[in-house]
Image (cartoon, rainbow, N blue to C red; front, side, top):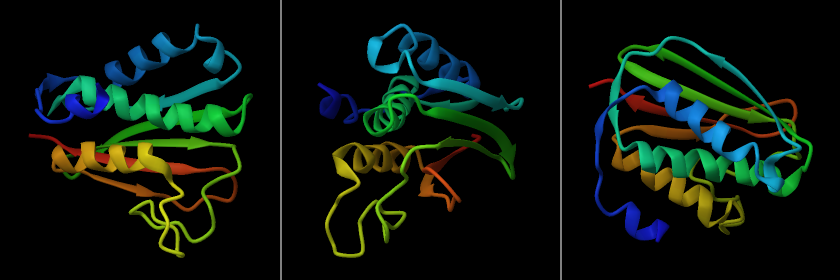
Length: 150
């Protein structure tokens, strides 16, 4: 079902912060996510055109990756706007990405240890003419994605 949902973009003008908050509100009562701590630094963002269902899938995937590797992780979500682009950063205090993983979510040995989910996230963002990348961190994992303000 998820795979077919990315075939067509149903873009609409939306509030990215509201989408982030709704995903968190939806996940927190679920057992898998109940022991996670969500913190956010959401700044005012201009409305942008995006498929909210696909961005919800992307956020769920990122949060699920964290929950899978550290049950009581803290996830910090930041949003900000710069140069007609909206940015979202999702950072956790888990074990981090495998050494040598590139922004294409491929490890130096050529395998895709980032998993299918991260490749799907990349596909969603690219279909939105955005960008997604791994950010360097001292501890944990951090992913930043950008959507253009149209």
